[in-house]
Image (cartoon, rainbow, N blue to C red; front, side, top):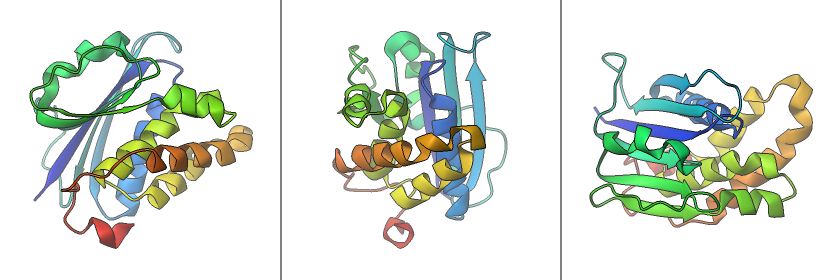
Length: 194
């Protein structure tokens, strides 16, 4: 069985929790088993917000604590040190280069920089930067298909925020279009889920 771990870090208010949940829901929709653990500080905005997601192609054995994670998504450098030590050698790391200016000091990390904040502003929706990173991450890794990520986002956006769905969709698509793909995607059968 294959398991892939994704560690997320950012600052409250950047949309990281909805992005991690969208990735989890997309994986479930594609037939994967998923465990998602959100972690955040006491404040709604401006404090630490992290999430840990494990995706498997079969039953997951126990609630994971990733100490050798396959990948990471960093929206902001403020709490980078909360996930950096738990990223494995050669981890895929996607960072918002609009805000993230620290060295990604993970051994043999495959680092992909995406100016997510700038891209979302150019798209006319600065609040959708997290979805730009989501699109980039799924396109790079093949963990889920872009269409599944978009569908999950649509299902997660609350009724009082439906005016943001089209902008979020454009953000996911723009992020996906802005990056290369890994030579070895997360799942051997990734073409079947695209």
